[in-house]
Length: 182
Ligand SMILES: CC(C)(COP(=O)(O)OP(=O)(O)OC[C@H]1O[C@@H](n2cnc3c(N)ncnc32)[C@H](O)[C@@H]1OP(=O)(O)O)[C@@H](O)C(=O)NCCC(=O)NCCS
Image (cartoon, rainbow, N blue to C red; front, side, top):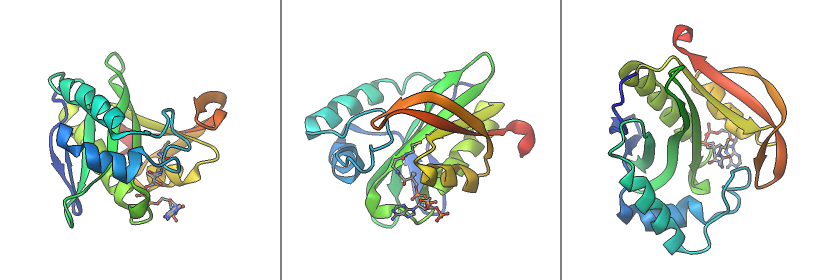
């Protein structure tokens, strides 16, 4: 695999780019402080923008690593940073990645995350050279599964009581796309 890291990707409505510390206010206001966004995630909603700043400082420091893939979703129409899409687990041996994403509630339902996921998968297959890209969601969070479907992933199966998030232990629905699916 090619460790090209987090490079800017442009889609019809989005610029997917590296985070900057200055994105803290947007990240905090738009999604990180919203318990409805973090309902099925593994981290608690931020109670203070200082927490967001600390996390961004860590993320920004990791961009030198070409195996680190973490994009801010900047909406072209207003320049706001509205969400985040990243590789949450990379397996260099099998050249495979697991994805994670979340986005401001104000922009749900416009197909923006499928647009981002599709573009990121193209980058990870074509530029990084991965063989497999996967993602999972809590069975009780089917809207995330719709993102995976619309981006072209196929459902693989359900791992029973295999995950844990802010709702507790859950069944995980796994989806993937592999190089030969394209
Ligand atoms: C999951 C998420 C990224 C979807 O992003 P999105 O850009 O809204 O995706 P889409 O517009 O394609 O909508 C996907 C589904 O969300 C649901 N949805 C759409 N608008 C919605 C709204 N306003 N409120 C609740 N659900 C909505 C619909 O079921 C939709 O599927 P459909 O198009 O077949 O009707 C977003 O809801 C989110 O950030 N959720 C919180 C974080 C999260 O759950 N991340 C995934 C963890 S595995």
